[in-house]
Length: 342
Image 1 (cartoon, rainbow, N blue to C red):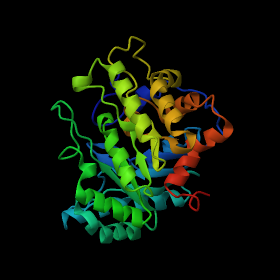
Image 2 (image 1 turned 45 degrees about the horizontal axis):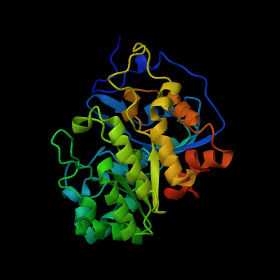
Image 3 (image 1 turned 60 degrees about the horizontal axis):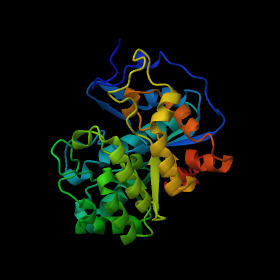
Image 4 (image 1 turned 180 degrees about the vertical axis):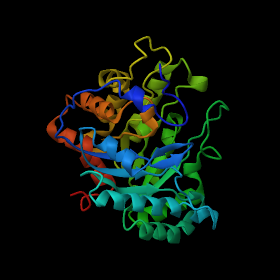
């Protein structure tokens, strides 16, 4: 059996072994979280994205998520992420040509800056807005941190969302009508709530349902993790300026005893994710919850076609208006896309 876990990218041949009919093919979708990159010998740029967007679902637009892609190789360190913004602008122009399908790929984006620069980020943010041709909607600050050395820390220290300089940078985002994407681990969700309280007019977009940690010291403790996460996610959802992205969870755990010759189907994915997704929807409400692909990261395990079928299964009991919110409306509001999507 072909492996689908290599670091060089997904095994498309393996994913192609499973095809599903498209559920609710007319439902309009904005994918609010995907990347583009060329790394480790794996290419996922506009042509590869366009192939996925053409999988049969009605994808009308996408939001590019920062991923340290195509940074400038020289110049001041703080300015190197401008390379990613310029790169995304070029990819968006390719999409706008119409040669890659009808979806408005990279219609808007959120990028990366060093939030520890504090109030000094303002001129840099203005350069990102200019370089993006007006597509720049905000910044992602990844502050995942855990005291256990078995967990990969993406932040230099604990509780970076409370750092005075980071708070000053958040104030600039707020003043410029930009949003803050936040990637933390589930044990840090109260930090997101505190940031939301400090800047109640700042739209904070919580990535990946709050990233419950299921490995390292938490391995084999999924029930305990779920209960701790559930309490924390309900607390952060009390802040009306926080929006949640629904996706990017583990799909097939090590104890899976089914047919490994086929990739996961939408029923399997929906069943595995249901407790987490439904808890988020109940806590935030459909108007503040948006399904996300997290491609090509999740393309290691599941196809784009199956991903969105799984989300539609998870939303099968929602009303038409609630579906409009979770598949497009929440993203459109959070990323201020009303005048962007045709």
